[in-house]
Amino acid sequence: MSTNSLVLIGALVVLLLIWPAIRRVLKLLLFRTAARVALKDVGNRALAKQIDEVHLVRKDIFRGSTLDDDREQMAKPLVERGFSRIGLFDVPEMPGLDIFQLVNVNTNVYVNLYSHPRAGKWFELVTRYQDGRFVAFSTQPDRGLEQRPGDVHVHAPGSDSGTLYDRMLRERPQGAMVPLTSEEVPRLFEKGYRELMFWRKHKGLSPEEVAKVAVSLKDHPIGKGAGE
Image (cartoon, rainbow, N blue to C red; front, top):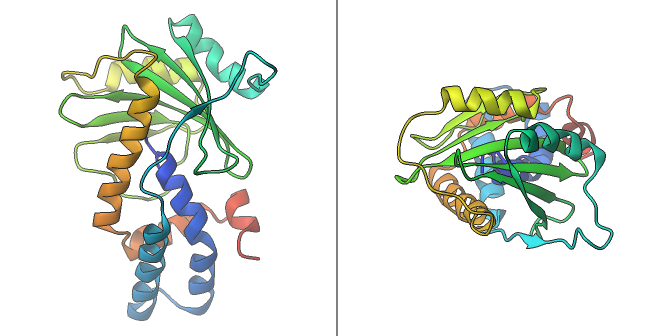
């Protein structure tokens, strides 16, 4: 979704939508002119179906809706580095997905800890800049989707959250960053999704991007089960 960062959640949903059609095309065609046209059509039809906005709705974590052990382990190194817990959120537009968020107001980094029944669990660390750019360090693999000019996406599957945060502080670009508060972070997530989806729908998906997605998902649960 990728990847915000999708590795942003919008990218995730696009992958889920286009996978069955990608498989059908690749089974029938070699990557030549006809296949390029077919793959581009697959991508554009998937994007046309994609929702333009998402909303985060807080779960009541104080009445029995606790965070799972995997994401507690993801969160622990960040809490030790000064992050505060914001809360656990549903995304009504994407059934099955929920997101736990944390924020470090001193370094202007917020964290999304994702859980999805088919895509699994992963996290991303995000800094937004006042000129509209953002930086995301994620444990999602690179699926081959192009990114907006100016944005920075670092893919580091298998990374510990604390180690990846330390790396982000060393490597992220300098510039005027958006100040963060616990109240503002969920709205920034919604804003980031809306902006990225607007850009992606106007850009479209190239045949090369669709093909790279297919290759990257070959052994993923999304790819193994979809469209059978």
